[in-house]
Amino acid sequence: MAKSSPKDINELMLRAHNMAGIRLADIAMDNQIAVPANLRRDKGWVGQLIESELGALAGSKPQQDFIHLGVELKTIPIDSKGKPLETTYVTVAPLVNIRGLTWQDSVVYHKLQQVLWVPVEGERSIPVGERRVGTPILWQPNVQQAHQLQQDWEEIMELIALGKVDKITARHGEVLQLRPKAANSQALTESIAEDGSIQLSNPRGFYLKIDFTQQILNNAFG
DNA sequence: CCTTGATCATCC
DNA sequence: GGATGATCAAGG
Image (cartoon, rainbow, N blue to C red):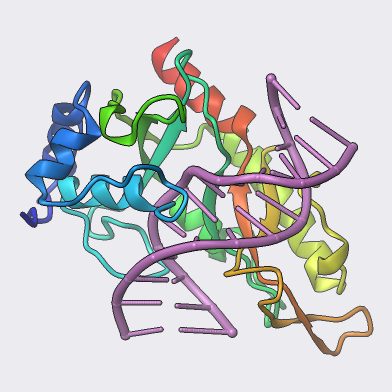
């Protein structure tokens, strides 16, 4: 069944805490959602399941999941030691019309102002339905983290502005990286060429590196 | 073993 | 095509 949208952060966190220790199969049953055998063709399944259980407003908007609460929801797959198994997607990267765009105007900045992290067991040896939800974390970047994010974002955006988007690899950036984010490598979108004209490139997205999200989990759990 | 580049489903 | 939700899997 579809959950109502939580009225405040306390209600949201109460729901999130109530999922801790629960198997995905049980949450799926509660929401009348079928459990896939694996995530190969259902890569966003866990995230959508948790959204449903928490009452996030569905839809494809470049905004926070709980905009009325100023909270972005992210599920994060972890191993048995609590370490993230994957980088975390943040948002698509703007590749044109970025003149004058500042860090504090960016979607990355706004989405990462406040994030509700929901760890979920993600090892492939565990059947999807048997994977359990962990303890949720409501996070806001500390001064150092905010600085690292801003530095990386500004460096990457500078390269994009100089028409070097196709030369940027995932190795740029300490905590934030730019990687392909598209249906496939043939997808194209407008970007800035080195001579300042418009060219076509594979769409990119901003991702948080594993060490950064691991630090967030460690700071919360010690 | 881990990371980077590639890819999947769905909605509009 | 571009946004949402991400994980897959080849190669270093």
